[in-house]
Length: 412
Image (cartoon, rainbow, N blue to C red):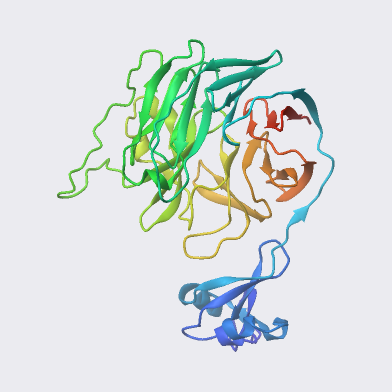
C-alpha cells in the first residue's frame, strides 16, 4: 500500500484536507465545496482565508479524516455546491379569472374539491367557477407574541365540509362547518411556548381534525359529534421518573401524507433543536392511543418551521440540508419515513414547498420551480407564477393576487 501525502500507508478518504488538519487533535475547519454535488474538502481557518486555497489540499487517509470528523468543528462553508438545472418548459393547464377577493395573507387560501376557500378580513369566501360566495364570518382570539408576528393560516378538510382558521405562533384557532357557517370547535393549545411554532392542525379523512391541546399533546376529534377520539393520560407532575408515555416534545406544523396514514410533525425539543417526527395516525385512530407519543424522529436540526413536503406516501422532503451541529446548506434532504433514514440530499431549492406525483414544487420570487428529487435537479420554472395554495389531490396550484385568480395544473 502506497504512502499517502498525510504520511500514512492506508486507504484514502473521499475528501482532501490541508496539512494543518493532519493532527491528533485537529483544529476547527471550513468546508470548501468542490462543485460536484455536495462534496467538499476541509481547510483550517488560515488556509480558508487564502485567495486560492487549492494548493493547500492533499489526499489524507481514513484515519486522519475520522479525527477531523470527531474532534474538529465545521465553522462554515466556502464556495457553493453544485446546483443541477435540467430545465424544460413545464407542461400544465391554465385558468384565469377576475377575482376581487383579497386574502388576509398568503397562507389564507386553501383548496376545496371544487374550487378554493379564502380567509378575508370579512370572513370565509368560497371561490369556484361561478365566482365568489360569502360563507361565514370568522373570529379567532388574539394571542400577542414578542417573538413572532401573529399570522392567520387557513386549512380546509379534504371533503370540503370543514375549515380551520388558526394563528401561527399563536395560541388559538377555530373550526367551522362550511355548510352551515357555524363554528363547531374552538382550538387552544395552551400557553407554554406557543409562539415558537406554527399552529399544529390537520384534517384527516372525513370529519376528523387533529390539533394540539397542549404543548406536548395532540388530540383527534370527530367533528360531527364533537367526540374526543384519543382519550388517554399523558400528564406528569415532574416528580419521580417520567411515565412511559410522557412526551417531552413541542408540536409544530402538521402535514398529512397523500393517503392520510401518516402525519409529519415539524416540532422541536430542548436545547433547542428542530426535530421532524413522523406520526402513524392510522394506528393512533385504530386504537394505539399513544402512537403520537412514540413517533419516528427523522433528524436533529438547528432549525424548525421551515418548508417541508411529501414526495409520496413513504418519502418526505425537508429544507434546508443540515444538522444541529453544523451550518445549514440551502437545499433539500429526502427521507424514507418507513425506515427513518435519509436517502438523498441536493442543493438549490429555497422557498415554500409542495409535493405531487413524485416531484417537488418550490415557490420563489421568479416563479414556481419544479424539482425532481430522484435526479436532484430542477427540471423547469413556471415563470412569474407565485401560488398561494395547492390542491394536494389534483396538484392544481392557485395564485390569488391583484384582483385575479390564476390556476395551473401540472400535466405529464
